[in-house]
Image (spheres, rainbow, N blue to C red):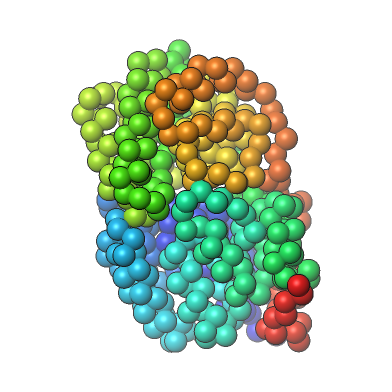
Length: 386
């Protein structure tokens, strides 16, 4: 049989980190032709041009879908969605695609999923079955993609069980673990090199900070963001701080405003729009190894990646409310006093904890498994098994 044409799509930096290990193993397979399509913040200088990381990884980009980012308001996100979907449709119309690989819960990804489904192109979905319940649009989008996908690869057994309860056929579902762990090699990290690269003071603890917007009342969101940055200003007396940029979800401009405002007050704070997966992991390693500092904000990476490096995380607000968490996660409300109280009381434990996001040993055999499932006569005929 001929090789299958499989398209990977990414419009967000965090999503790329999840997809990259799959691109890596599928590109080595003799049964697939990999085509990688990028859009969104990957192509935006104001968000750190993360396409440069893709180039550094030597991943060939097949197509760039450029739509101007104007998503600070929810209604503008709908307009962006429509414009993006129009271009995705044109791409899918002219290409001969057998499979589409999508990850997670982004609204841009949902656009690609809907277009693929309506063209009867089967979808492989990674990280379905997760729950955040935190005020963003993630859960409903994630579950919607699950219901129109043909194969489901989950990051943990709880998400796998949730997909089965949603009526998906068991043979279509497989728990593969947290994909970035497949490519992770801790031995490549060097404390002195990391210290030099980021001009870090080895005697002073480090905060690695990322805050994303939550789709809620604008006044409430801005109030919470203000409180969080007030706590960062106070903590800067005793901590060195590295801040990365938010996603381009509604409300992102106010977070960037607060980042720049803090930088004017405190010159030695580092602002790095896009760290990239390797730099981000190296800083988590640095914190955990030195047992000085913590990850802070509301990013899922602080929950799923920090645990690997024995790095504590201060998880702020409701964005990750129901996410599967480990004992290194300290939940706190978006309130300055509460944040400082948690920092003072709960950051002395850098012990290794059990990680539910484990990678399966046969991860690199996935292309063969998926190829064989594609050959089944009933592959494209989905059934619900409620």
